[in-house]
Image (cartoon, rainbow, N blue to C red; front, side, top):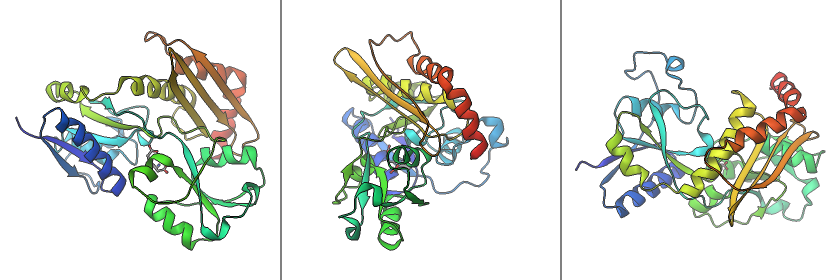
Length: 302
Ligand SMILES: NCc1[nH]cc(CCC(=O)O)c1CC(=O)O
């Protein structure tokens, strides 16, 4: 049998994640090949991207490579994947979630400051809002780029600390001090590596489905159904985290105003049944409790 072509973005984190998927497939005795996908451009798709439902900035190149049959599967950080997938692309497998949390990383010179004194760098509306909810006077700057770039900017920049995903730091094996941030609720599906495929390749998809971690799938589907019911295509400050505890699911989530002053939260324990859309159900509770107005306010501000 031919080897399975695994498409990935070219960053160190993305390559690590693709190798992790390759390792799982190799453990099941399949051959794999990593195909880094570099840039976008028009390629030879003869339809405009929007007409194919292709939107995400992190995922569009891999979507196009899948549709052009340059790769068999695409590996993503699930939190970067839009909830609405393009036509003919489906999510096939989720690896077991390891570290969902956000962490604080300071530079050495700021190690003795209190949380409320820190000047922070993050471009995430969610991280900003949850922090402001607790420390409303905090000063923020924007920071972009991959993990390595952001840590370099932290060293060079005029701010004290940044907030990152623990999963990324662990995967890059960075020896770095960090603090856990229980005040945050993670992004929906943070810390989860997912594998997308083409709907016209049932044989490959069947193989890849064998590496799916079902408990992780249950949790992220709840989180992402919650997100898609709330947002309708905009990036609002929304945290959502589901975990299986014994025979129950604990679901914590919140929609916050950009300044963190108004947060509509849910915290539920329930017994899971596959026929019920719990994410949608809890999002509707949020929408009915002021979330509708809050979403409209956020959309008018960003
Ligand atoms: N948006 C960037 C991004 N996408 C996935 C990860 C790390 C892996 C993960 O959290 O799933 C990160 C870095 C970060 O948020 O700090």
